[in-house]
Image (cartoon, rainbow over all chains, first blue to last red):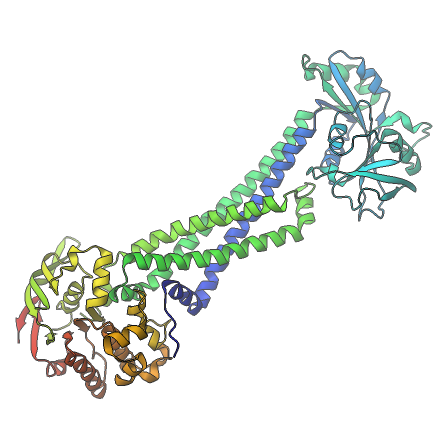
Length: 403
Length: 227
């Protein structure tokens, strides 16, 4: 007969195998704990990255949009809904004459029809290649030449590659660059020259009324104020001179960003609150389960002690069991959360009004490792308390029987 | 002298009340001796055994096994000493339910990474299966405790206490709850172990066990007397 050596690890495994129901319950609790922690961390990281890339990219101080279209602009920024709205472009030249304005950049927004590159409508953005300070610096990280009117740059979510031809409103455009992920609505947008944008407006017949010259229109004007000037006073000046005449709304972009930041903070608070509540509950539940399981095993633990197991051996054996259960539950939870986030990426983003999950596989792996280690530490700390209290026993209570 | 118990006292505090479980116990055991300690339930028999095994610290007094005072050793050394020098048969069904019969017997060796086969060959000059056969439990080697009778579990627990060939075996009510035939079998097994030079100290409230022993002691209300 072949002798199988019984090590402390074997005993730990055997305990898990033979008490399958109890082990499965513990693994499920740990799995839920780790899935919530991992998914919550990934979502929060994503929201904060989006906010920070938005703040970095958005160099404008004042934003001008047609009256009542502020929300639509936000939706364009977040990619939640492609939009088309217009105001007169000649305002740009008037604004340039105001003292204290360093740069003025018009952006033209056109919501495309569905086409072969995309399952739904995409946002087309026309920008001024000369004066733009919002889109151009970002695009310049990928293209060095000036865009011609039949060339486009696509966001990371557009399903096409460099060299492809995309037809928009029956007009073919050549893709010359594909941008990396920004976490903003720009990821689901197509960038083109202002001229190309105006020509598409004509094809799309987007502006109602008897418009003769589409090149007279833009969707928004972004203003950068010189460092020596106060954006508030410049804004007041523009309002008094042009707000009524051009029927426009003026917004301080820091207010937009701070509104978004508030939204993100509220969401952070909600996720943190929910996670904390779940954590507290999970910690209590796991502690109770571990304690009761160990209490149930008092007799077994004390028997091992009688046979010559030292406290150190018992602690090692019980910790091994905790590590095995935590590893199984922790990894299962992370995989489950990863699959859930990947499968429901679009749904989650639409629900919270954010463009996309922009976490790279490397970042996700780091988070997974961090979450796993955190859970391992928390569970080991909790089980250590129960293990130490159970191994410092008084055998009298267990084996005294009828004595 | 193998075991020496001197002026042993054990008190427990229960609220404000102090309960004396053992009161100035003095006795000794020679190598290869077979002694019973009789006494009613609650007389302090199990407490005495647990203190001899080094599992409960005495309030006062001194216990030495083979000239070693377990309470002067650290936990690792005391546990290793207990594993190698003292066999303990606790009261009731004390096999681990997650292990088979053979694995339960293997356990004391496994705790200190000793091979049961090697150990049996070195110590008992037998292979474990033959040892099980001698104890009439070879059919239990692959069974789990849930599939064994009380008497079978007791025999395996005795074998487990003996497997490391300790100098002293402590047995707590080894015949409790058994029929007369099983009691005889269990006692015969213990006698066979005793014949091999192992000292036995049995605590029991069963008078019939006393007739197998050479010396009987009595414990009443924490005090030890000779019968």
